[in-house]
Image 1 (cartoon, rainbow, N blue to C red):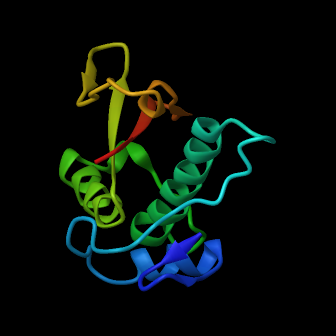
Image 2 (image 1 turned 135 degrees about the horizontal axis):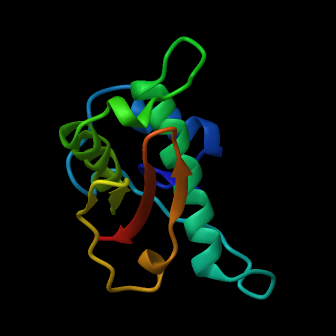
Length: 134
């Protein structure tokens, strides 16, 4: 995993560097993934890393003192704010909010990566999160 100026850093440090301040400009943070293509599916590998970045970033930005995030309290603008962080390293994310009354989506599912999703169930809703290169 790389971060700005080809300086290799570990995963935890990358997440901290991305989410510790306000979101940076789109594609301003260099990000690349080292994947052994003979050993694993590159799309699956990419998805798992992005899902982990999303989870850790949400905890940093919206988590309580124990790191728990109540997705049901977040509004579209909160998700848009997290999307700005993702855009800073060349990705974006979409989400669907599903409950018995409605189904909200801003998903743009037109690439292999965005066919995978992170599913989180809460007491009130089900959330599906998708990632995409920009």
